[in-house]
Amino acid sequence: MLFELDGIYYRYQRQTALTDLSLTIAEGTRVALLGANGSGKSTLLRILDGLYFPDSGSVRFRGRELTEQNFADDAFAHEFRRQVGLVFQNPDVQLFNPTVFDEVAFGPLQLRLPRSEVRDRVGEILDRLRITHLKDRIPHRLSGGEKKRVALASVLVLDPAVLLLDEPTSALDPRSQSQLIDLLVDWGGGAKSVITATHDLGDLEDIADRCFVLDGGQLVAEAPPADVLRDADLLRRTNLVHAHRHRHGGEFHSHPHVHGDEV
Amino acid sequence: MSGRPGRRFGSFLQHTIESLYDATSRVMYAESISRDTGLLQSLDPRVKLAGLLAWILAAALSAKLWVIAAILVLAVFLAGISRLPLALVAPVWVSALTFTGAIAVPAIFLTPGSSLYHVPIVDWNVTRQGLTTAAYLISRVETSATIVLLLVFTTPWTHVLKALRIFRVPIVLVVVLGMSFRYILLLLETASEMFESRQSRTVGKLSGDDQRRLAVSSVGVLITKAYQLSGEVFLAMHSRGFRGEVYVLHEFRMYRRDWTALALFGALAGGAAWAGH
Image (cartoon, rainbow over all chains, first blue to last red; front, side):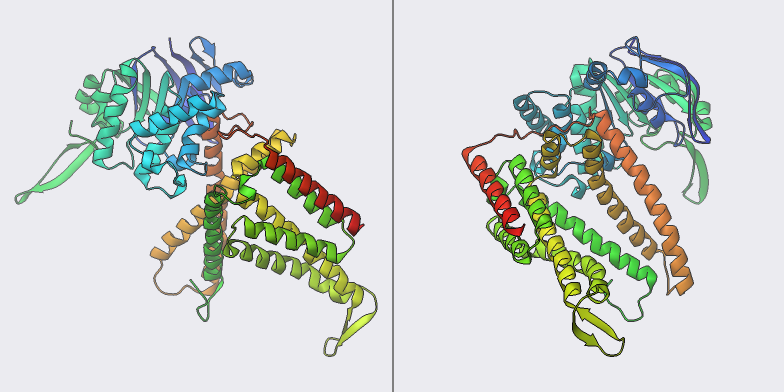
């Protein structure tokens, strides 16, 4: 099993983010973590990336528990970071190097890959994401969409076996969104594990084989995308759809509405 | 915002933030200069770090003004042949002079010694010893600031951090330095956005009290936001394998010109220390 979470609790000072969360994720699956803002998706991703450690409960990656003590072991931390990559929701926090090229090279260098390989990998991923023309630019000064691509490149360059994505299509224009989805669908020939936190139901069936629906820090449903999309009551209860009121001719009417494509 | 009559505290704060933001842009610009092909840019970062720190030490220990002045002239000469634009260096000189001047000026009057000039209305004496103390302080600070500029503006920041690690500077200090750089940028970006957003929602002129209240609350929010963001930046670095050690694409290698430069830096610092003793 790739990840096994058992009875996870996590609090930010006085606010509970995750409550008694248990789930398992198998190798090579594409998973969507669905939920409205504040449902605990981002916290869960950080726990899966070994950045946060639960207040109680356990999280295991390929059978080994993710604890601060285990991450103090250089060999384990090194191997874990090589295998698991996280793309943050806000690309600004991921951009701290003087140029785009340096930014993308940061991860492979930290993992002590040979310099010639780092150069090759960076060139390749910049090409693949069509951002080679940005390589000498200062990351902070890029547009929102460009920043998002650079942030994605800075993780994809590591070629991780597990990719964690926090709202990957937010702040992207529709064309860039569609290109990104295509890239993620094709990425690793479909053999890699991709865990995406999102509240966008539009591309759900393209990016996931399985969905976990979170509400107020609790797991409220686990099902394939088609089943989740059919369950209008679940979507309404978890604020993933809302009543959309608009005028047709002279009359108002309302129906469920999602952000992304219609259900 | 610039110099409107009747400007109050809020706009003063905004003006300051905007000036700092300009300074940030200069730092960004410095990154591109550090990749230019001037004399200092071509040297190994370790040579620059060791050599320039030796000069700062020589200036700090010198008991003769002409020696400190000679080091300053040399530093300016190096800035020239390394193609550092005056527009980049001058604001730092002005800032150093302003802040050091604020400390040094009282010393001109307060240091006991032989009087050179009597200020009639306030009944103060400008003393020779006071003037000498102020001159030493200002010249040392200006010289050190210029030398630090030479290092920072001709060397990519990550190379400076890596060179510090090679000289066994503790990892915690290097991480703090690296994070501080990003923190300052985030703080300024956030501040600038906050003021723009506030300006877009403000109609008419606020009273002095309201402006002060707004400024104080903005500072609190700003620090909290920047702190949170820098925490996120650290997590993002950590997530990509950062464990404190600095690795850069560029491999440090000593060539003949680096050894020559190191010998010259050392000889000049040694000579200055001997002459200034």
